[in-house]
Image: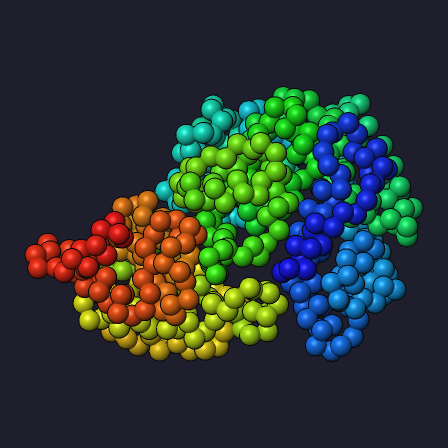
Length: 506
């Protein structure tokens, strides 16, 4: 991950032609290029390629621009410059083909007409789990509609999910679009002319400067936004934090024309554990340039402030719902919700390039087994919910889940069940550091703690968002005993230490 940060800080030089193609929109071209390439090139495949190069003692072959290949060489990584340069251009061609295809789709959409969206907002890159006809499900569209800061009196909410028919939520239409404004008449002709010109230009420049091919799709989006009338722009454009490092170049034009461009965090788990008194930074947060952020609380706001460039608006809005399929669990009254982090298979875990080994089978299994034991002793039911069905889950973890299913006080919630509703129905919540469910439980007024069976996590850590961290099974058992006593309304005779432990968890 250190290499990723190094490359994302290495400038790629000026691209005067890219600036010319972008028009008059004011943004840092070099920074946007680094944001884009970091997001779409420096992922798991990059980690895998570097590890293979080191293990095989062969020079790295990976699609990278010359400046980044030089930066890797300066870090002691041997690079096959010839093959990497060829791959860089081959990748450029793939992105060029994608840009042309999406450009044609955009023209088809404009020619076949679109709904009159009137006063609307757009959600980028969401799936069918992120909205529903039921207003009771905890998804991002329903969250937006109840958010106090939403645009007032909107007529439509737009998404890009194929195969999902249009419907109404109250007076608001939920409609599929391509997320971009409509064009008609001379504006449409200008857009088509530009699309042909930009495609030919980027193809001609491909052997010499593939960056134009990489950015073809983004340039077409920017041109479409620039040509649109103000009334056809959405009032809010909302992006989530799965790809937080690239702020699309076409959004700068939106911002200049009065639309809000918002990055919202559907998770609060963005910080690493504190190691040696400091937090290691695993991801290139220094690339953040969004104008508006929605975060869960002051702890997350402080983290974003450390890195965000410019003078953005940062709003604390509480837990932000994201996706739900509406599966609700029926649980016993004496149930406690338990949320872990699914450990990956060894090979994939290595590719992730984590700075520390925590989310591994031994620790996660101990987390679950310790909780099952502590809850059994106090007549509680353990309702365990994994994040989702995970194709890369470690075999030891899957085996342990099967063993736990045989325990009389264990129940496995459906991976797609609604976490918020599960928390609402249970007595308390125990989460693995530092998952967001602990914050949701706190917001719901439920007793909530993080449990660390290893003792690796420091007690005082801002990444915990002021939620207590229990270290080791003895502290866990004591907390559960206090919870049981509290439930029975028999606090008399508790030790001073126990009282303080309970007060800390709130």
